[in-house]
Length: 577
Image (cartoon, rainbow, N blue to C red; front, side, top):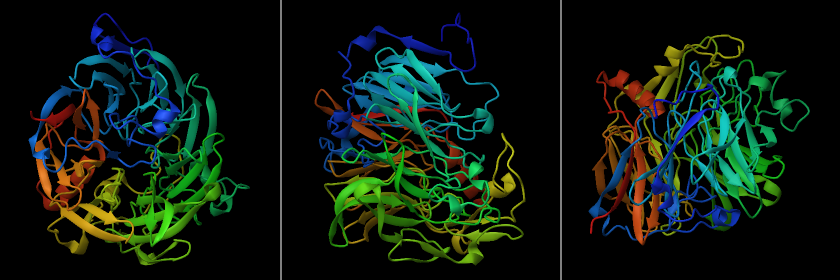
């Protein structure tokens, strides 16, 4: 940073560094609705590669027969610590990554040459419960990033200069944004984190050109609205249902699908009812923000099982019937097979456990509504254990779908449970945590299933949706915090373990084919792209946030702390010639 420059305000002033290399790539290709709906195989234009959320690259130059020849093409230190989680987004050779610290870096995707760097000056008193960022959206000639101080910012893609900024949430109420925005039909959509701070969850859309707010839809239903009778009194006002993972989008119906977080506070005694639309998948009309349909994965949540991962949109066959499916590996440990119906309604097809769950006693075959073992519900005056743990069978790291193999891949954690102490009565106070439990009781809640250290915890699973059967599983002795990438070369790429390894598996059978020791643990979303006929695999290393918090919980059980090196690095691989 030029030492002569000084921040002018804590809210909007950012530094942009540009070099002549920014013009070496040729004209920047504007990102249109048509390109987003049908992305070119050579590019990775959005969070999961396509609107359906597949996490799939059709590129096949790197495949099962030669992936062992992958070598490091280039790397770049980001200058930040903590959890690096964003995917390298690539548009015709221009790469954009985000990091903790509200930073966007533009790079030459083939060489790693830095084009520009934008870094926001954050308020000095900002509480960062999750100091991370999960990426940018591209639309037109702009790059859109949402920041941990609850702003949405538009940057010029070629220069990094700020075009506009919009305040999305109230940082004094501990609202913050970590997700990558979703761009569609002239709108940029975001949501707010804060399920532990008493936010009222929402999805908000902003005009891509001006930053003007177009609509805002809350995820906790108010009295007089559909679902409003599922909240007692005015508990919906601070009822949670936060949105902190990017939605998926069906361009044919103009519906965006989002996953919603847990209700607040965690104890259920003060909020009897289903608490719609928390722990749900919701379908929103992108023009108006209207909720057209929903499916609640579990009602009246008491276990902190956010279901914020958006359903993966796949046209496939389930139970012998061709369906427009919406598939979700739930934090509650069940694999949900839903159907996108006419008008936005979301129907239930099937659900089955992919990890051990001792809370659900059954699933209604028509509605998909689970029934509970109430002795496993934590709350006032009792300490309760349950499985899976607070972090669930799968937390936010996204699944992947490969149309070539026909398999759906899940980064799972099994054999882990939790025990919460007796809940504490409390009232909402703006700017405070709104959990209902002492924080040390939450952080120390992790337990082993059956009380004994299991031989394995992490599981990379592959499922055949047509049969509803697990096809293969690769097990790890450590936990797995691994966003997934699958490719036309029939590979699955995953990091997520505390040994810093980034791995490639045969997508058909789970055989480990390649691994590389990274500078830090990998909890970021991997991507693939092509420049000048050469395929690359890209991912950020940088361990932290909830992967480390889960690690600390395991460390307390083993009594053997596992140190994972810190520091963020963009890592890009290609085949050795």
